[in-house]
Image (tube, rainbow, N blue to C red; front, side):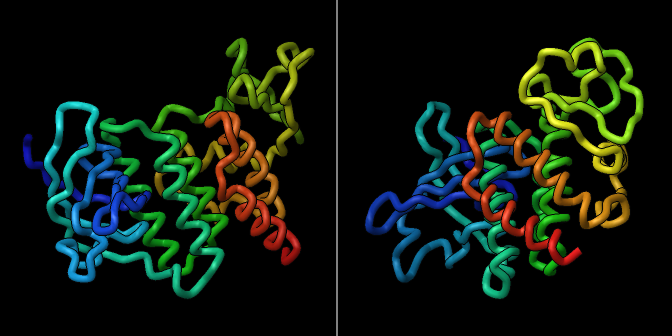
Length: 256
């Protein structure tokens, strides 16, 4: 077994025995890995309390070539997710990042840029940035980096350019906007406003664009609904944290 080192974000923890646990981590160099952390639940753990959900760690692990779990041998804490102690919305938003990282990625498939985006998102939530806007930014960037981003300029069925309008049909099943001809007879189609469409295009095409600058609070609620439904269809199920994201979006819209 080869010993490997990397930065890692803890995205899932499951008890394995009275003294050990199974840790799912998204690493910068190796993508998602699952590892057995022996002795992690002991009072004097060899991991020095580094194994905490959403914590950023420097890890050492023994990589197994088979489908068996890797063996975590060292974890040094670099940053703990402290927003969890001060804000329930930020806690839920952070947990949602962990859930998406686990559900959208495959084991052993490296995505260093996605790691950086997730790390920046967790750090922003720790700094009490707007949870809904921060999460929306993350979803758009993650979908783009993983090759799941919807078609927003051309018809997702025939490929022709879709003309701009106040509202444009968006096919959840087809994966993007639809031209008038392809819209006919299709199910799971919603209308999205030009504000939401342009915001998504801007965010996907510019690494420096900020959601705060491209969308209003009212339009943010519509964007949340679109992303929630699109991601649920992509995963084949609705993420557990979606209901909390929806509750926050409703509360945010009422304040606008």
